[in-house]
Length: 293
Image 1 (cartoon, one colour):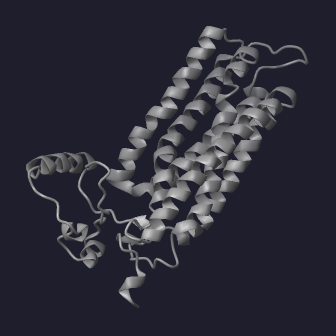
Image 2 (cartoon, helix red, strand yellow):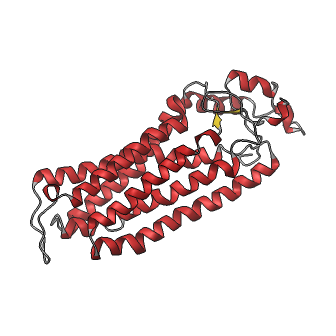
Image 3 (tube, rainbow, N blue to C red):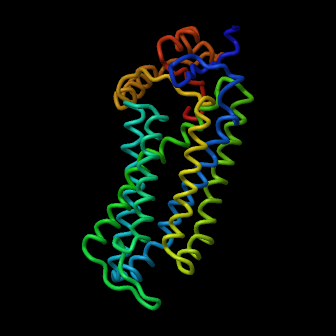
């Protein structure tokens, strides 16, 4: 097989073998990811957009307490990705971190749907009002929310970067496709949020909370099955590196030490080793960019 058919950035398959550029990555892989993002955003905003209403009308929390609790939960959803990104870079890689975390995310959504659907897990409601929730019901509801936050910690920082990994920066055509990918990624993200804000909120308040949470949960499960079906098409970045924190420090110290050097006219001269070395050594070959010049 001609070595030119392999990706030039050292991408590998799930088993660590070099991948053919024509059979992996690009849109044949990213189409699976964009669909997941739409359903994930629909699930998140389907919960977050109307959570204060649920806490005040169903759990009888006062407005100040409900807003504080929602802010605490939302803050945890955006803080846990720091840990999730580190775990992916340092130990398990993006694919496996996302895989495990997405299952946790779905578990949290399933528990939350149960919390608002099963009579023993939610306050008893008449047509007009709901009774007060028991401490165990409140605990189950909030535990479900924070299971979602844990799952989001591993999915949010890894799914979009995993999508970027499907494009070879050393291929001019694929660099253009990467920009297109992020355009569609943001479109799917906002589309999911729009459907949740306009559609799911209406269902929650006018049909039932169980149906309103069950729809995005089902969609999330289906999107994950589609994501896993695309696994043979995915490219993975070789990962046999030191601690990410140590590598960051080495980049800064080396850059400072070489601050007086002149860049060569040909960026290819910046790579001291042949591309084949990066494949065998499990190192990722980075495309030269003047973005941070």
